[in-house]
Amino acid sequence: MLVGYTITLSFNNYKVSYCHCDPNFIVNVGDTVKQGQVIGHVGPKNVYGVKGNQYYDSQGNPTNGATTGCHLHLGIRINGQYVNPVNYF
Image (cartoon, rainbow, N blue to C red):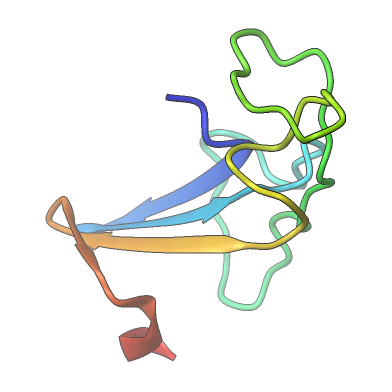
């Protein structure tokens, strides 16, 4: 299922996903990142040219995943299980 543009960081038994990003990523697959480093930006509501995108707004324009506007969806998994991201702020 397509959920928009996503950056996922993996370390130890953690995976941290930043979803609905701008498609112009600042990092690339395999890059090492440091705490505080900018890795991307919140994406636009509408994205074009994404093969298989099944999400559209009320005007028929393709959206950046199942969303009605720009926002960041943060997901944290430990050993493959989602946890509440608030616990890590």
